[in-house]
Length: 596
Ligand code: PEP
Ligand code: MG
Image 1 (spheres, rainbow, N blue to C red):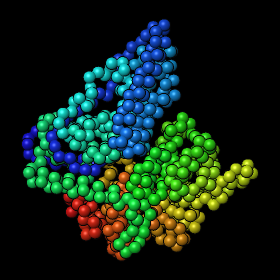
Image 2 (cartoon, protein in one colour; image 1 turned 60 degrees about the horizontal axis):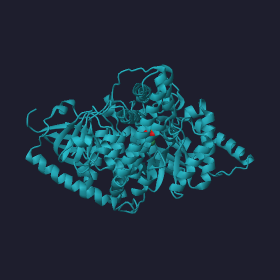
Image 3 (tube, rainbow, N blue to C red; image 1 turned 90 degrees about the horizontal axis):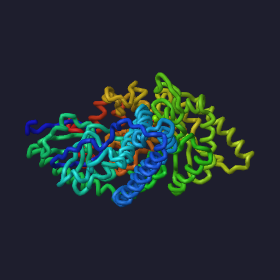
Image 4 (cartoon, protein in one colour; image 1 turned 45 degrees about the horizontal axis):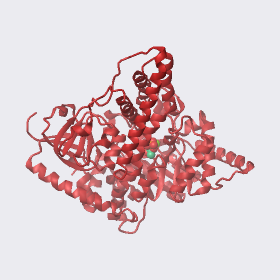
């Protein structure tokens, strides 16, 4: 490769700038094949012992690693190791391995590989990107267990890195990422991965700039090639010129200072310059996320994706198990508002793993509230009973996903009334006035919002699905990402209608889709009149800064002009202009060069 500067567009997964020489890491540490080996019947007991011994040793080494990184990682990210420990304790997997040894007389290492491979395949087939990423965790843990059988010797990652370098790899597993020595590794660029992977979560937590989608040709770079990783704008620059180096060195310094200053503002109100207050809440999936939410100054849980918590149980959790979970969540939030979304299973989400329900066109099938009302009412009723009971312990609200008609809401409300009568008869304590909210995430619900709003206590706009269904694009399909346009006037129109209906019915309205965490859209959403923004906790600081720099009058003007635009490009142009004027320090970091 020539030594001329070359710029590649990639996907940013962890913000920050890294400038330095590369070090290439292969992926041979991951065990991708174990030759088939059988043992005699009398040797099976010995193989079983070897298997259990390997599990025990791996658990010990994970616990040691967890201990070593204790003060370097956020509490929620330490949970990644708990996920790995959970995989090692998974009874289905353990039984599978034992059966392969006992009945088919497979050697322990083959049985481990074969059983975990089945697990990996199930996870890889799930459309939900979060769960698909869990396959990487299983492969990672499996490789660690197999180290005990010496099928994977001599690949210590730590030993391979010398000096301060940018790691270039085809893929990094979460435990490899956790092992990256922070004093030596400036950042990393990998080919395979996604922003929802544990690897990405860890990189963000370790404040290590990182990008994915690196072109394969870059795997053959000379080891000493100088590169720049821009984890904000998603750029990878090979052999940067002196001029580019100057620009990026300055940018890196500014970004560092900026992020440190943002954390100091976590306690401040999200209040505009002219006194308009917006509630900032977090989207979380498990109890351990509460610490992170508080660290970034989240005032409430705006979206608890309850279906993800179901995954921690071998079967749908009982009423008692769920009651304990929701009660604990309220307690950790010190009584502050917690919005629990009822099971949003179906379509692209968790079908295989939770309900083993298959459909030809799942995005348009029995998803969310439909599945709960039509096919799995028993499970839905159990969840609602648990929520009603937990509601006594704090400000718990119930939110319904994937609504397309008022009948669905009426039906749920009838079920809730029946359950209240049941609980009253049983003399079980429950919340008599629990709030119910509607997610507006389908075009039908947005168009019917004047009829929906009078039936509920709040509205929450799920822009991820609203964009998907309005623009008719699969949100996980790379080929149509260019049409994933939250700022499309068609979407803004639907958001605008929803806000107006909320105001007319004196209820509050939030946005809990990804759009809420993009600073470029903050002025638009405020200007349209949204009361709350709910997002991944780490994005709260930057959004708070945008809100605190903005005047509501400017935001309202932007929103009214945006509604008149004919394309997303025009809306983005105006939004960029306002952002550059009000928060240049953020605009400089997040706005892509072609939009400047
Ligand atoms: C959404 O659709 O915007 C949303 C918040 O829900 P999810 O991403 O879980 O579908
Ligand atoms: Mg959704």
